[in-house]
Length: 465
Ligand code: BES
Ligand code: MN
Ligand code: MN
Image 1 (cartoon, protein in one colour):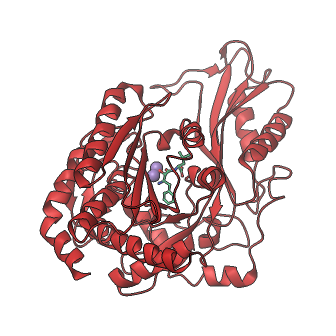
Image 2 (cartoon, rainbow, N blue to C red; image 1 turned 180 degrees about the vertical axis):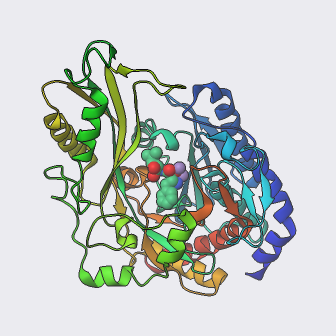
């Protein structure tokens, strides 16, 4: 299959330019001011799918932003691969920390990307990774044809919780019918350590509001005599962890999957340097749950983190005030078997109970989702493994990642499909942060590896019938 490599090499400049055009559209799903750009990004993806070889594409309306659907059915007797990705991106702020504007992609070299990386919001998460699949379709079509059927479902609300995707999937099970789901929206261990993600964490996300007096008060006249909601909220948050960094919510760990010592030992054999980890983040020491390594803490263990906290006076100078209200956004990363709804309920009960009578507490759940583990004995893992072996020259490692793609568990539930997570980003690519980037090497390697997956999956599927 050297023709694939040659084709990519002679077209890489155009591939990059096409991706840049998509990246230049600021498709920020969280901010309604960008609604027209969301529409424009969806249309651009649909057009790219048609050009690459889909015989049918459409923008499927939802209560929110459209889902882009595309397909090419070669032969109903052949297997079908469904590619999932998202065209929406995170807000780029804080803008002043970007070295170049977030929606003006530029290629610059970095230590980990000596061949250059594309700097822009969405370069890695997920426009760059999603676009690899569109170009892989073109590569297959121009070099012998698709070996099996392909479907695309590219959504525009992943970064805001995929609220409308569940309804869409449930209402279109026949249309979305497939033999495997393929996603590139995760990472790999290093450019010379190919790897397949075999686990994702779930998520429970809540917002809390603590109310004290019915209005902001003079902190001299009332200070010391009534509850200050910010003081109380801080105490309540502090009470959510104990010294060894365990979460104190009763029942929080009840269903946590117990990973065997053998599996833990194996997990810790993946190359990882604590010194480099600390250096990359400018931290003097790490922090986490006692009894677990860093790799375990960010994959097989659940967590609780405050994502934001506000209230009172934060403007210039000083204002002596006891605020009426204090707020925080809190997320819990969950591991398989912990149910998002149950954890949200346990949190609400515990957090409410932590509050003294002097304040009122309101907990509002945001989105959530379940985690996922994939077993490396399935056809999809074996086919992906062969593909990496061919393009990287070594077999990929299996590893569980800490992020969340809640729809993966939903796909399994509603479509009875297995998902294979072929991620090509690096942890250091700064997704969701200023100066997000994606290696040019990674982009091109992804485009090269995907057609091999299609080939091996089709062959193995037919052998197994
Ligand atoms: N692509 C990420 C998830 C991810 C990144 C998983 C790297 C594993 C490795 C996705 O776009 C994302 O940001 N997901 C959110 C959850 C969502 C419900 C907002 C997350 O993990 O915070
Ligand atoms: Mn993503
Ligand atoms: Mn994301």
